[in-house]
Image: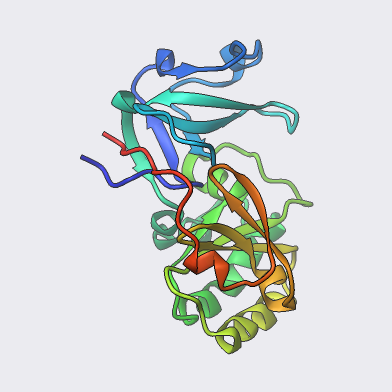
Length: 221
């Protein structure tokens, strides 16, 4: 059995019929998605036997929130596994894509931050699939695993290293209760926590580590 599926994991399905939607599959899905392309785990309240996933097409408007039968998960790739592959170093579009150049420049600081990190968003999808979804204006989306409250000074150092890169970098801290934006966490005060049951506005950042999880993550089988 594979480990539990977590938000931002990429999943490959063994059968297109494993996907279902609450209100019917979008027309574009039949033309722009097939089981050779992954779906991405999204946040949603658990349904036994099903994984909440998102599917993307070639255009920005082609996004669908669907459900995948957990019995048809053929392969799982986590953001940190994707980062460990270091696929940006020899990517054919490295010279023309700011997001990949930012990865190249930030890799040492990310490796030295003391936290497990991974690549999500369009950069993660292109590195995992070879599909040209990144553009010159794409942000770089990253994830930091934070099972315990991180050292603010440690995060300030990392944020400074990410501030002067070729593109905007959006970092999310993955806590036991959900996801928090690094920029909000460092700013202090109230912050938004993304959970499986929806966003929560927290008065104190520590709540992101002390709150119980709102739903159990479905196992990948």
